[in-house]
Image 1 (cartoon, rainbow over the protein chains, first blue to last red):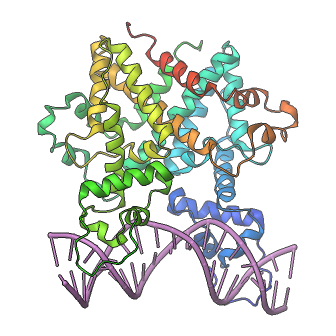
Image 2: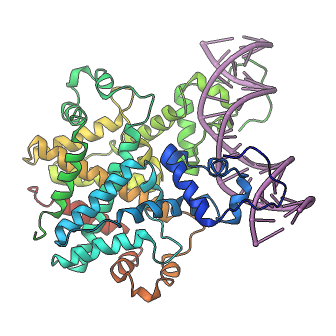
Image 3: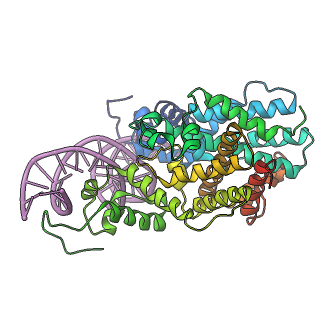
Length: 213
Length: 213
DNA sequence: ACCTGAACACCGTTCAAGT
DNA sequence: ACCTGAACACCGTTCAAGT
């Protein structure tokens, strides 16, 4: 971004917000697996070490970038019907997980340092919608745990499937003696590519099927 | 493992199997996040570059090590009742995911290069058990997808929760104005530590509840 | 207070050179 | 055929030094 070196100590106009925003741009280009402090620094025309003035370490930066993406999910209006709202929230997180590979596996289980984090708001929105449908709090916790696992598990699998330098499913499965040894697995893996969305939707609907519409 | 340098070209007795076995020992000590070619090489008293004579790259090594761990899951006998068998298989994979942090997120979505991989056998065992309970193949695919997501999602979350240098859940949640803003999320995160196993078991039972015992 | 430069301890991978 | 040594292009992080 910048090539002319600045004198030592000269201000570069960095701030926590600008660092996180640059991190978002890098994550958008390279995915969360390629999000490094060095790339963020180059994006800002700055030295890697200088980022530590605005961010504690890489983990905190990654969490903050992910939080900013989750926050975007919550900006557009949500359905008023609780079951529809749950579905919409889950599908939005699913889409975000596919758009930003590696994001969900990085933040799941992390409890953000700051109050008011988008992650906390998101979970509260789903949990309260579950209770709104008439579920007990215990049932809500159970369903929420399943839904989050569903989104994260699907997202992680999608990342590895999209990995480059891997032979196609069809090529690979040819090795397996024409589906005679593992017929069910073979047909499972050969599902049409476009079923990614309908499959996920079907899983969510299965989990939510008892809830009153 | 070895300190006295060997002359160039002198055989070190490496083989694909010994490299994978050493990889397993390193993964056992450091977890899959800390499994590096360099550590495997030092474990064998050998130079990192020499590993490339027996393994194509790091990804292939990781897949092979994970495959060896999954294979262990399948050695002990399984229940004859199909529903019990499914439960047992899922719980074994769940335990393996907690024992070897980072393993499941590394292999999910990867289709192994060799036929007869433990991963394929595992999925075929679950899918056929699902069909045995009377489910259609389509239902079996749906339930299998949910179960795998459940295991992977829970495993990934556990890895991040166990990460060092993180304040405890209770400490963190104190920031959130005494549970007034996010009461449901707060109580969800404050579940007792020991609920890790019973929670997961409850999720699996929820998914399998329609299946005849 | 904020940034640089250099260093440290790591990575995966390649490749000519040796035996 | 198999291993070494050295290199290359990366990492996160620390810290004295500058302004």
